[in-house]
Image (cartoon, rainbow, N blue to C red):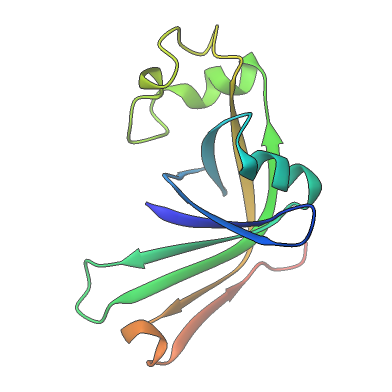
Length: 132
């Protein structure tokens, strides 16, 4: 689980829990297309994700910033529906990708990340997407 931060059209922050998946070089979040986070991304595509990494002894945290795009349609649903997420999308839309018109995806292209150890008090490891 991670927390996704978006910005409302009026400039207010909005944070919600999400269950993202990594596919190719992007991060993907399955969403109901009526969700606030979808409206926010359509108005302002800048997002941030926060992962709390509890498996380590030093309470690492991973922060990722990127640009999100709302992806819809049967083709993208067919591509991502099976074997990408570690949960069954059929539990949200039992008809599968062919009939799940209310389901879309946020495709997040990361542009920078920070891993901070011991809740941020340890030296940080940083990543920036290289210019191509």
